[in-house]
Image 1: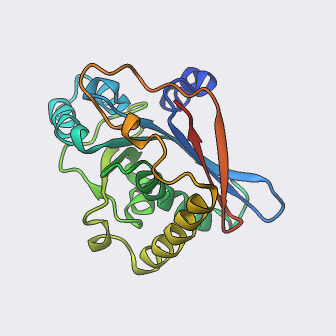
Image 2: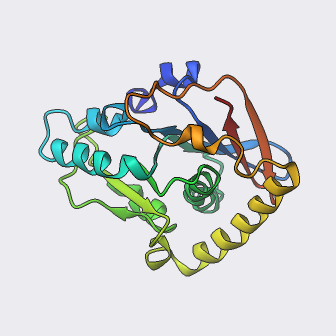
Length: 219
């Protein structure tokens, strides 16, 4: 599992453009994930996860086809193991990809997940790619690729998730306007040919409804 988390990348943070943290009423971080902005298929960890497996070229091509429109790859998702809290936390985490896409004006989000937890991610409108699963990080797992598309996610999201996405996105946009941050530097984050990997030098955090926080890297 440590292999799947990419511990070295987590420590350095060089390829993390944004992060999401779920915060409880006591101010404790109880879940989170990070996002990479892909400049090409070679930047994606998913390609490595399908190494030597049927479907690797399909994974590469799917990413390459979408990169010109903006692709965020979600990595290292986690939630606390406190009893009774996971369903609510995973639902919140599943929505956070959409807010990042809105802030950065990217059309697509993607992640890989074991088959046992696919429905969690699908609840917010992602679609499972029609490619064979890969035994990653070990042969005990069957991992699939999922895609979010800002233009049609509402056709696939669960009604309760869709309602929260619309409401929380409105809160997010209002907060960004209040801070005067809407549209600042977005053009520099769009994928371009032969661009250097995105690096995060520092982060700021925006509180959303007391439960979800989005951190944006300055580049």
